[in-house]
Length: 224
Image 1 (spheres, rainbow, N blue to C red):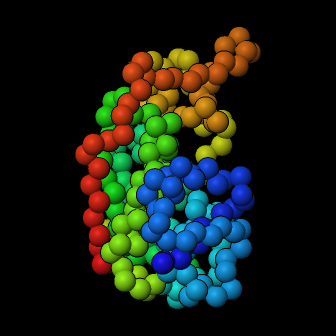
Image 2 (cartoon, rainbow, N blue to C red):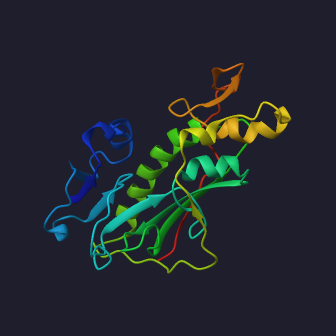
Image 3 (cartoon, rainbow, N blue to C red):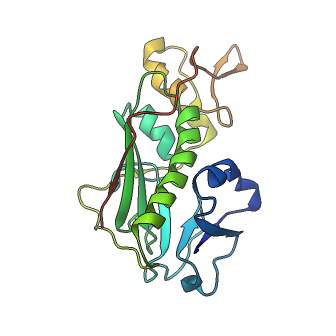
C-alpha cells in the first residue's frame, strides 16, 4: 500500500477527512504533520497542503507536490481563488506541480480545469478546490508507479498576485454597482467585502439563490 504524508501549517487546517474517506480509503496509508519528514523517500507522495513556510533545498526531491489554483505560470503568489473570480477568468484551474526552491515554479504534473459559471462564487470554488485536490492526489497515485514523479517545465509568461489586505475588500460607494460584482463574488465570509457610509462600516456577503452543483465539466490532464 502506498504512503502519503500531508504537511500542514497547523493541525487546525485538517478539514478534509470527508474527501480522504471518499477518494483515498483503501488506496494508501495517510500521515499528517507540521514538520517535513527527515527521510522523504519513505513516502510515495508528500503534499504541501496550503503550506506557507519556505523549505530550503526542496527542488531536488521528486515526490513532493504543491497544488496552486491557477493556470501556472499565470497567477503565482497569493489569493489565487480571489483573483480568478475578481479578474473574471473564464476557467478555474488547479495545477499540481513538483515542489521547487522558488515559489509556484516547479514542473507541472497534473492539472484540473472547469468553466466558471455566473453563479460560482469564491466560496464554492474553495470548497470544490479542496475536493478536487484530493481527486488529483488519487489520480497521481494511480498514474505513477514509483515515488519519482515527472512533469513538464512551466512555459509562457509568468505573473504574480500580491498579498491582499483587509482594505482591498472595500466597495467604492460612488462606483456603479455592476462594476462591484466581481469583487463581491470574489470575497468570502472570512474576509468579506464592506463599505463605509456616514462613518459606519457595513459588511456584505452574497449568496446565489440556488446552491451551485459540483462542476460536471471537470477535465484532468497529466503532463509527464
